[in-house]
Length: 187
Image (tube, rainbow, N blue to C red; front, side, top):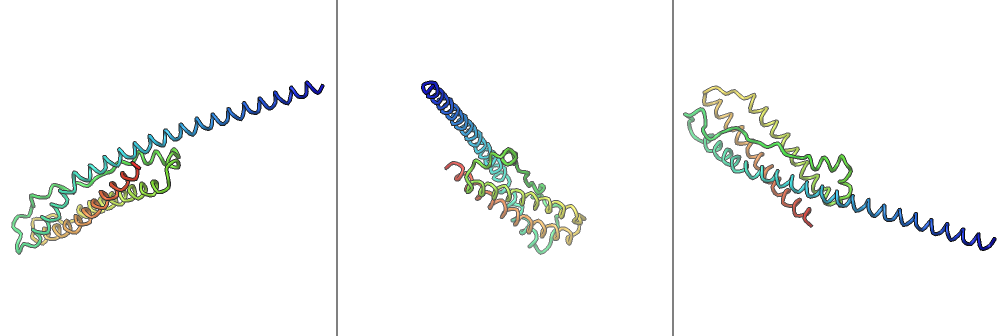
């Protein structure tokens, strides 16, 4: 009887160890999968940020030119050309944010360190702020009086000068944030 009881205890312990090792391996495997998905998320976010950065780099010089040109023409004693040739629209940007949003929705963002999450959140918040400002800029421009008078042209030039200053500042801040975020991601 003692022999059978000892064999039974050994079998129970063996089964318990096997189940325990099965859980350990399963948890390790699941953690590895989560880590792989989090790594893929960071790669996708990095690509998304690089794409958005390239978009800003493509338009910032145009916005600087509009800023400088509108100031120049505004400061002229008289304006004879009521349709400034330098202005080809506001050319503001709509940013990509699907990788970051996917990370939030899937919960994979929680696998990333808090300092990276905060930096990424800062970048995407600045992008939203830029897009909100762009919408205000467009709505303000649409409501302006576009007749061929000098007073109307001066108002538009002043509006463009002030607005483009803010756009350029926001774009410069975004470029700086992009660089810091990309540097942090690559650590």
